[in-house]
Image 1: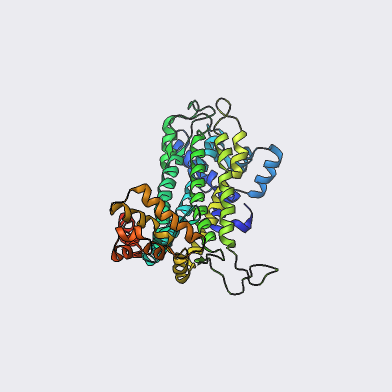
Image 2: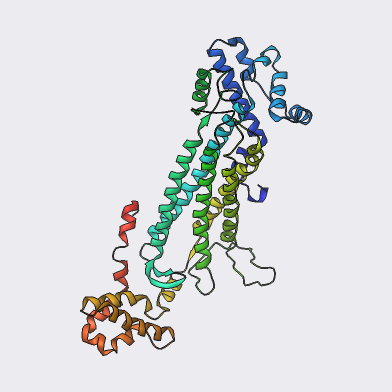
Length: 430
């Protein structure tokens, strides 16, 4: 991912230096486990534990060998003297690569979970603050019935909580290492060694591995990242719609000195939310190659490797970035309650047509007759011919069924808000 869309903490996780240090961590854990099993001398451990990596030498050897793991092992071993012969003992490259990758993924998950916590917290605070702030609910982009801005936000809280659960489950699916050799048969490394190494690193041993950890785990993880990105895109898209000039119910932050257009000084564009939506596509685009990586030849080929070097860092970096930007947007969100009220009333009572239909049915009119009656007046309102309440009040068929007080109750906004507490109680929000 380009630096423009990379936060420092996540960039560190996927940096070359952190990758190599994580490889070294795995190699040290393997050496310690071999020593416990009596295969290598305890006297070799102090030097191995203190091992460092000469990155210049590593780059030189990689250029010569065209194999990063061989270059890594040689670079480490060269500085260890006799103890160097115990580095990578019995291992194949993927024993280190896949086990280390699981550790990197765990680091990435910790950051992503922190992003989701921050986002959920601010969404929850806004949901409670605007619990009773009425606004029009829209279906198909058209005014439907009244809702509240807090109710909309409560829905975001609920899905963000599900996303945290999804991420935790996917992280658990990724928390597997393998130290099982070239085709996974433990021919040169006993299963006990694998179990000791994984326990040291806080991982579980892959139950049945080949040369690699099966890639369905990685595909599941990437798919989860895409789902989380879809949540962020959904929220950002809603804010974009609500920021349209004709709507103007909310607006993302606009800082002092910020400029929205090189040609039109008046512009306040939802550029952060648009950026979030764009980067969600990048995360989502990683799903297909991740799924295609599941299918490999026999006990392993290398076709997945080049793909993962791109999609795993980029998906994590893009998701981390867009979640942080979305939290920033919500933290500084402008909420225009006056516009919400104005838009609520803009359709001249049409949003109460459902209540009118039910009231007439409850008063004894057939549903089809009531529907046709209300719809006829509603279509007239759409044409600009008055408002729904006045038209119904003037209709003798309505007056015959509904006294003025009952008709008045049909257009009572509070009726639509009387159970707004339900989702908040279910979420445990104040």
